[in-house]
Amino acid sequence: MAAPTLVPTRHDWSVPEIEAVYTAPLLDLLLQAQQVHRACHPANQVQGCVLLSIKTGACPEDCAYCPQSARYTTDVAATPLLDVDDTLAAAARARDQGATRFCMGAAWRDAASGQQFERVLDMVRGVRALGMEACCTLGMLTQEQADALAEAGLSAYNHNLDTSREFYDSIITTRSYDERLETLARVRHAGVTVCSGGIIGMGEDRHDRYRLLRQLATLDPHPESVPINLLVAVDGTPLADRTAEDPLELVRMIATARVLMPRSHVRLSAGRLSLSDEAQVLCFMAGANSVFLGDTLLTTPNPEADEDRALFARVGIRLQPTPATSTDAAP
Image 1 (tube, rainbow, N blue to C red):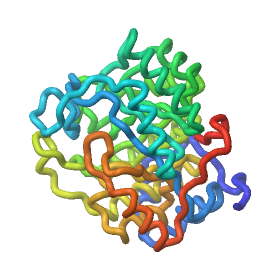
Image 2 (cartoon, one colour):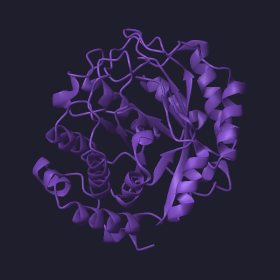
Image 3 (cartoon, rainbow, N blue to C red):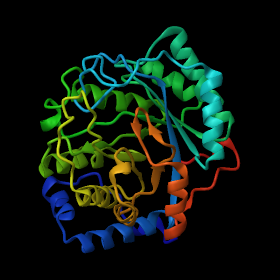
């Protein structure tokens, strides 16, 4: 692997610069992204992650894309917080499947307190004891909660910005953009790595995508993990009738994220089931180096593990090996 110092890390990207990267001829963009990727990451390797919904539905927020909102009528049934033993059994299965990161998501606006939060801390400790990275997405955090998660050994905290500040109010009204950034700042202050990205296909235009990428790429340091999601239109949500996004826009989004944030894990996340094998390969060529394994991503469908293994075998991609010990986990 080439020396990472060959690729500078910048935090001063402008919107016009990002537009120039995003709109370059696609083959040129893919070449640039792959060169950056190979300078900073192992070639032909992706990290396998599994995302488990540990508390599902009945969320008070109005995120227009989300079937877990209590404001919409969807097929998602509300369930209480899982037991620690059930969660750790799922984490062990994920590890056996080849995952090195186990992500736990709870449909809360603000992370719960009291016994429920203590249960989540036990889950984090248990996942780390399995030798895996532990990631949580629990909604907004206080600094005290962020510090407690860090002390429990949390590897990463996911809190997506979703879209640009300018388009945000078209999608969500129950939590402000600044509140999202404040949670990210608390996570960073606690010493936990940051996982933050967005969704395309919600009706935003390209300029909103440039502005989202600029928001992420001007954070210092960059988020160690940048999930790029393709909208999964779910019946009962306000975005149920959105026209499917061009997969090449997802490729451009991933490639631009790779160029702007060269050392981050760029995660090919929700919406992968709608992609052809060829489109997925282009996403990996664009610099995606993480995927979610398993047939469910929170409450939306995801490719079966066997399908992923078959695709990886066909194109020569390997899963990131499991760390030797729980303290070896990368961001």
